[in-house]
Amino acid sequence: MDFDQLDLRLFHSIAQLSNITRAAEAQHLSLPAASSRIRALEGHAGVPLLHREARGVRLTPAGEAFLHHARAILRQTEQLRLDMREYTRGLRGHVRVQGNTTAVTDILPAVLPAFLKANPKVNVEIQERQNPQIALGVLDATADVGIVSTRMDVPGLRAIHFSTDRLVLIVPRGHRFARRKSILFAATLDEPHIGMHAHSTLREHLSKVTALMGKTLHFRVELSSFDAICHMVAAGVGVGVIPETSARRNLATLPIVQVELADEWRVRERFVLVRESEILPAHAQSLVNALLDFQVASDL
Image (cartoon, rainbow, N blue to C red; front, side, top):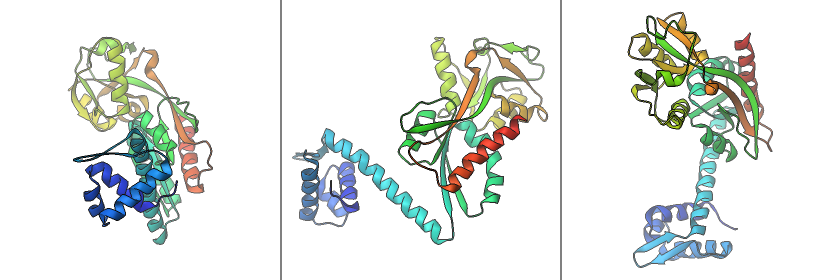
């Protein structure tokens, strides 16, 4: 198909406004010019992209598919523009990383200081997403690197084993569970729980587990970091389920106790995701290496 950026912006405006006249005005085009561009797009596509109606237009199924790709191209073009602007400032690299909650709140903050110091002209953009969104982000090139907490066999992606962690229960010292070596998650459901925010990967995981039990997990407080959960548990507000690496970091400084979970799903394998068909830019590969090296050092 032959089209340019203006065609895509026009079509995107039409989808938003459901009106060719207003979309033409938004793109500073005359109505005949806008109509001509849309007819040309439909001619190249070989199918109608719009249903013309008395009060406006709506997308056909083919139009919905075209809009999906148009949005992706426009996003990529904008990202290209932003990246190139960074290079005019002397920047040599820009790495876009999407990760789950643990990656964003624990792993990357530990890895990035040394990486950025060693790579002063590289910027890193971080976005928190859930596992399926991360895989899609890497696949459609809105992210260069993804970090997920489960193995994902997705055509077009390469998964590199990154780390193994376990989920544990943390309770205040003196709590009735504090002397136990292990406990089933189901036995904790009558306790007030402190948890992550509703859109976090761990929150989604625990909600699915409790749903399979036919129960509901109620949270007294929803927070945005595992350290914050530890502080709330230490204050006696409730109990929490967090990664063991996060619990260890707080055991020495807070009056909390770590209790092993006996459930099989407590073990979480983490993977770095990259596109299978592409060679990563040197700066992105350096970040992947830094992540893997950090895990080796953490395990020693």
